Image (cartoon, rainbow, N blue to C red):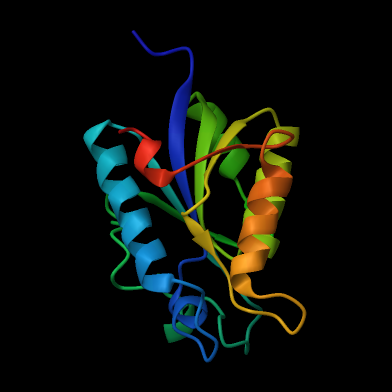
Length: 178
């Protein structure tokens, strides 16, 4: 018998060119460790793992197949058992088959982690809710870089506060599948 609600872990853009680019993400080692812990807990619970790779146009540093486009090697995603897909927009849904794959798997709850907070995390959270998914955002499971206007830490705090309630349930990663 299947649960009425099924959950998936969605990891966004944890790629070499973003994780290890010239500007390093805020608290990147801790965030990577947090995401890997969630991957391990998801696997133990039989929860599917999806990982999105942002794909730039041909000739860009993150074009498909390039070294910077690859998932970060220390990210515990396994393409043999996890679903890895490419996207070309901030939303993991626009121009991908993600919504159809999730529907086919009867998944309606998402736990969303990765990068970058103010772009792909924010957009995917909002679009997921519009598409009818319930979203849990581990407040300590996403990151970004400083901008000329705001520090990464402030961007993360702002998005956790803005998205919480209206779009997502914000929790500590340690509370997810604990």
